[in-house]
Length: 143
Image (cartoon, rainbow, N blue to C red; front, side, top):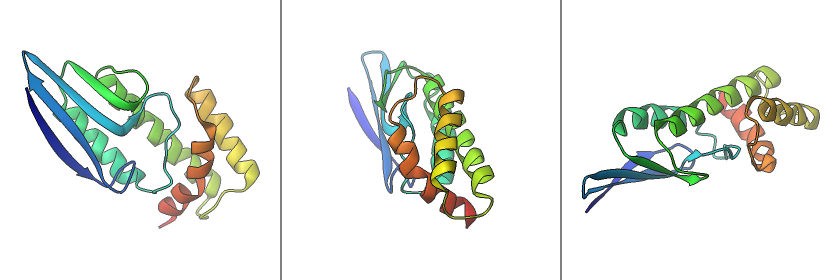
């Protein structure tokens, strides 16, 4: 078995990486919090633009892998990365629309954000992560 760590840089956190394991005819990847499968994003580090770039990179690099293990939720395939990308695009667009260039959302706007994201992505857990991420992402988008 060969284990290789791949540095991704900014993304979900200030320093993301993933591990690829290859051997015995299998290729699997342990991608940590690059994907939070059906868990609201932790965007408080405000690197959602870079996070999206990492997802594009992994969608390419992990083609043909047998299994992908995210930081939260069930394992799967490339669809996990595509789900996270879709989620982040929706999150950024919704926060951008609500903030209208401001760096913070009101409590009512945060409640609207949670309601919208839960409608678009049902069965997604940990609403508090979404609330805690709203202002940092609004600030990221305003700069």
